Image: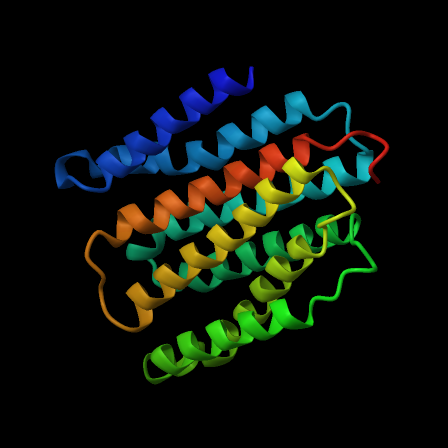
Length: 222
């Protein structure tokens, strides 16, 4: 089932990349983009009955918030104010992912070095973005702190969950951070070549890896 879904998921992601690369196909983007997380949401719902209810519900809410964020950002070109609402939706998604990852926190894991590396990365990114943020300065700072928290809590799962689950979720969290970084650079610094491909590829893979990683848990792992 996982292999079949992976193939179907890959095809819809490729369809989305094609649709956003050609103006004549852009109308289908309004279907393909929401379908990415929509597919993950349905797949997770069907495959997660073995999980602890708390884990299952937190993941579902994070995916639903992400799906809503995707829809809001689709219409941002028509209504620029929707970008803020999309940002809020993804902020909520990250917060629920944080709560989810904290359920499996390894309390013996010291995150200081990892946090230091993240802060260096975030500081460099912020230095590049700051002149173009204007009214979005505070919202972007808050968003950056939350996604850094999401990556940190994913890191803190090491040693308390199966290795495969940790690696998949951790890789997904890092890719999510990279995707958001590219999006921020493209929006607040300068337009990037093939940004639609790099943003969506990293984003789709991030969500996919997190979902598959969570499904690798057993019910005992609360």
